[in-house]
Structure formats: C-alpha cells, structure tokens
Length: 475
Image (cartoon, rainbow, N blue to C red; front, top):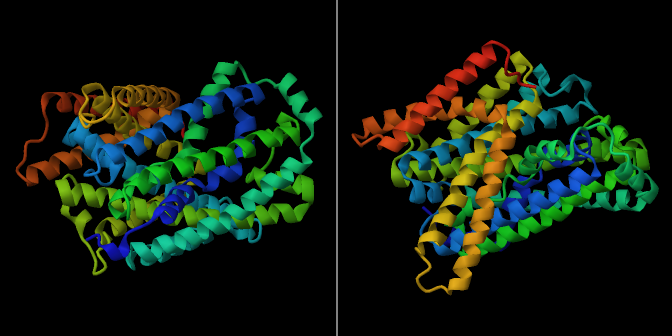
C-alpha cells in the first residue's frame, strides 16, 4: 500500500529518471558514435533524437496530467487505450527489457573491474559470475527493505556519479582542438551514406534515454502528481545536454578513426589521452558507481510494472503480486532477480556479450513506448479528457503525439533483426497470458488480438529458424 509516509517528491523522482539513464552506455558513447557516424550524421541523429525524445517525454508528462488515475504509466496507458492483450505486452516487454538490460549492466561492470583485477576478464568469467550474483542479491535485499530506503540510496548514488561525468566534459572541452574537429567534419571517413549513419545511431541514442519514463512508472508513489511530468522533462533536458557533449566533443580531440578504435570505456581512454593513465582508472571507477546506481533504479522499476499489472488487473500470475511487510512487491522482485541470475549463468557458459544483450533490451522496450504515444494520440484525436481544455492546447498535444508515434515507428524499423528476435519473447509472453486468462476463467482474445498473437507466433518461428541456420547472428 502507498501511504503518505513513503511518497516521493520531485528530487527522488528526477533522480530515478536520471539515475536509470546514466548507465554503461554513456561511458562507451564516444567509440560507439565514431564507429557508426561522422560529425554531420551525428548532428542530424541528435536533432531527430531531441525532437523524438522530447515529444515522447511530453507524452508521458501530458498523460500523467490527463489521466491521473492511471498509475504505472507505461503499462496503464497501453491497457487503457489498446486493451488487455496489448496492455499485458507493454508490461511484459518492459519487464523483460529491464532485467535483460540489468544483466548487460552487470557484465560491463565486471569488465570495467578487469582494469584493476584481470581475472574479471570481459565480464563473463567465473569470478565475474560470482561477483555479479552477489550484486544482484545484495541489491534485491536492499529493495526488499522498501521503496523509501532504496530511492534514498539511489538519489545519493546519482549525485555521486554525475560529478565524474561533469569533470570529464570540462577536461575534454578544455582540450578541444577546433582544427581536429574541422578535419573530422571535412573528412568523415568511410562510413557509408549519411542516411545509413543516422539509422545506425538510432538504437544507440534510444538506449541512452531508456529510463525517461521512470517517473511515470512510479507515479503511484508521487507526493504531487505534477512532479511526475516535471521530473520527466527535467531529467530529459539534463541528459540531452550531457550526452550531446560527450558524443560531440571527442571529435575535437582525436581523428574519427582514432576514436572508433578506442577500447571501451572509451571515455576513460579519451581522458587518458588528455591527462594520463590515471584518467582511465578514474573513469572506470565512475563507471562502476554509475552502473550500480542504474542497476538499483532498474530493479525498482522492474518490480513495479508486473506487480501493478497483476494486482490491479490480474494480467500477470498471482506470484507477481506478493508483498512483504513494508508493502514492497517481493514476488516480482524475486522473480526478476532469478531471471537476471539465470541470464548471467547463460552468459558465463555461452560468453554472451554486452552489445547483443543491450540491443535485445532496446527492441523489447520499443513497443511499450509506441503504445504510450499512440494512446496520447488517441486521446487528443477523440477529445477524451480534453472537455475543459482550449482547442489550441489539444491541437498541440495532437501534433506532439503524432511526432512521438512517428519516432516510435522509425525506431522499430531501425531495430532490424533484434525486433524479429523480440517476437520470440513476446510470443512466450502470449502463452503465459493465455494460461493466466484461462485459469481466471476470462475471455482470452478478441479477433484482432488473436491475429496479432498468430503473427507473433509466425515471426517467432522465422526468427528461430534464422538463428539455427545462422542467418541471424547475435553480434
């Protein structure tokens, strides 16, 4: 139960958003960008990202105010606008995206520790498995103590990990060489067409902004409903400025080919170029702190979505709605931890890497984002909840939602093979959905939902066959 004593204000809600967005991807950004795009394509990609993500942030802000009765937004919006099955898919896809992404975070964390302790290797060694498992269950125990203590720790960690990032930006800005930057603009290297480079940047940029919905997920815990929208916009603007600087400034430090060849975390290698070997160690320590903070944020978010979908609407099995004495969803929390643990064991035996893991996590979260944008568009188009709102405000909300929907469709196109692979997990979710509906003696599908389920089944078969034949490779 949510009470006045455990409500969250603007600062912890904003910290939840920023903390979940500042993860491993930020520290690898210079190399990832230079590997996929030149300066011109980078600027175009960031322009598209700014417009698309700003509209998506505004969607979450608008929906939190238009529909204050819908808690845990990213799930509730899909269910309210598109029905039980797509609502379940939104919660299911979001939940899987979170724990898969968490596993990727832990793999990178251990890889960063290898700078100091080589036995950690690439993050999939036996020592990495042992330490990763310890981290999962320690964080799980912290969350079991309750939402308030966990978000307090997250707020402190978020403040701590922002400081090294600011230091990095200031040092790189001081060392910025306009002549090197101009050379990178005029000689962009052999990366193909600008359009192809922009497309290659899309999954990178969307991964960096995953977490923008964090405040809406915890809307039920907000002390003031208006803080949900404020936290969403504040965290977006902060992160955009930080990410834009980290991706663009390195082009004034080294040639593009040199940045693309840097070992990750490439921010550490760049800092070492300007300050010496201690700079690399500094960034690796910051990376460890950053991932721990992001991991804590995502564990909290992961438990909230299936718990709410199961408790209020019965769309998840009852095991997900078990609560402990401090009213925290311990059932969803433990299941999430078990899934993360199993994935790390899989990563150990099959040497599963970070990039495929993260790409799959992004593909899983794209439909929930699109569903939320579509619901906002539906409200603006029909006028529902706009009865006492000026026509001009409704028109602008309609345009913003249209842009967010278009951006979501573009991201689905950019996801490529990982979108096809995600169909397997969505189909498995559909089987669980059917079993749960039958157990509760409820109608399973309408005809449109049945068609979607069958399409997912066909896509799953195609995906599995392509994997077996080697037509799809996780690399």
